View 1 (spheres, helix red, strand yellow):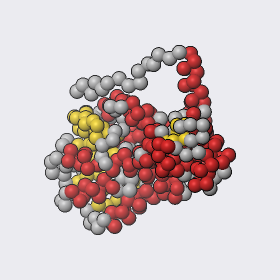
View 2 (cartoon, helix red, strand yellow):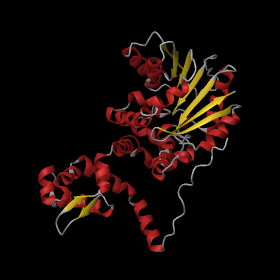
View 3 (cartoon, one colour):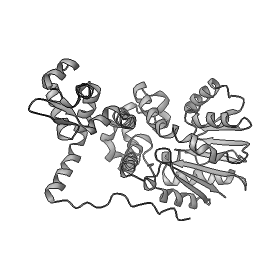
View 4 (cartoon, one colour):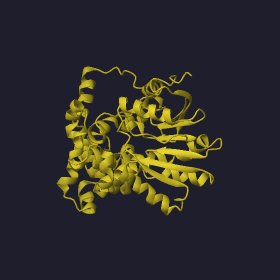
Amino acid sequence: MPIFSMKPLFKNRKLSALEAQYEAHKIAYAPIIFQAVRSMRDLGVLEALEKAGRGGMDADSIASRTNLSTYAVDTLLESGLSCGVVEQIDKQNFALSKIGWFLLNDTMTRINMDYNHYVCYKGLYDLDKSLESEKPEGLKVFGAQWETLYQALPHLPDEVKNAWYAFDHYYSDGTYPLVLPLVLDRPVGHLLDIGANVGKFSILAANADPDLTITMLDLPDQLQNALNNVAAAGLSDRIRGLALDLLHPQAEIPSGADVYWLSQFLSCFGSEEIISILERIKTAMRADSRLFILETCWDRQEHEAAAYSLINTSPYFTCMASGNSKMYSAKALLEHIQAAGLKLHELHDNLGICHSLFECRI
């Protein structure tokens, strides 16, 4: 199956030395720009400029609307001007640029910024240490008692937890209704939802097929959240839970399900762990069972912006989540699938915002 025919991404750019140096400076100052722009958004500067329209507004007027000092507004406006978030109309007035409009109004951009601020920013200071140790060294900003973010997640402060779930669910929620007909295109008696998160896919699938029974598999604390949501949906009679930590190589996966479902799950593990999990799924599968893997693969994207975002989510996995996982390319996932003794039957791209669905069989 010729699955690697997507257009090439990140073509080489021809820059002068001065242009290259400027791009390098943008990277060097990126953490400061990020926090300056986030502050413009959260402190009301971008909103004030949007309301002012194309005529713009001066710093004193923005200060009076935001209860900031003129000094604070001047500092933010100059930073915003340098990165294209605002435009200078005349000697005194500034207006919101198109970039600034997206930072203020685009849901995806807002979710990504909140996720990077609340979940990633402080911990990524120790990215170099994580790369050396292959452990999530940055996770200690939330406490030293957890080995992975997935153990910590139910216990994190609300602003962190809310930002993480908003990020995770934004990309999957719109995709699930698109992939469900592919999963239920034939009678399915039992589905095993491995890494069920908060149970959204299981609930959706159970509502779509009244004859379907589902087992959700996840870490104990996370699983309880999913079971609470199942109970609230009135589906406890057909959806049950099984607490299991798949990082333990001896953890057995229940056998005989018609469908094994992995959604945004393999990106939580290192390569050897992925192969081990897939081998155990293969052992559990019947000859006619199907394995579906839903992931966001950067090399299957139509636009560089999507690939850029996915690639640069990988340091979060390194420093905050697990220490050894990442956003894998489809090429890498296929190698893991084959190493586990499974066969790729079909690959569906461009599902939802940026997902690919791998259908695998024995």
